[in-house]
Image (cartoon, rainbow, N blue to C red; front, top):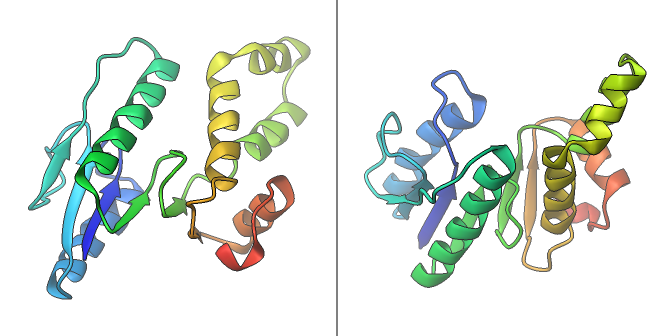
Length: 167
């Protein structure tokens, strides 16, 4: 089995990174050919890396360009399974490690001033992330979502048209 694991950046303290670092060797021992799709190879310790590092300026362009380039790369390569830690529509499995962004915005706005709420509403990054989440969770290729908690599972179920058995 040819498996792609997608994570844009490496954070040595991140939960997704610990998950990936443990999963890759275990999957390889089980016979899978695992390729990490990321911007930079440093820090991961991966045997196979597909570096996808398109130019960007700003957070929206950073996430959008990586999503577009990563999706094109995994389609070109023809992996059997794509497991993403990024909000990229078209993956087979998504690990919802960051929860639902729209719900985070709702919770954050309860304690925010009028100007902070206006800033959040007008921020193109928040609009991009919310749109990417909707496309991801409602994409026909998505087979499963790994939820870190019951709360995240419930938020996804309430916020998107997704079959409960995928969670």
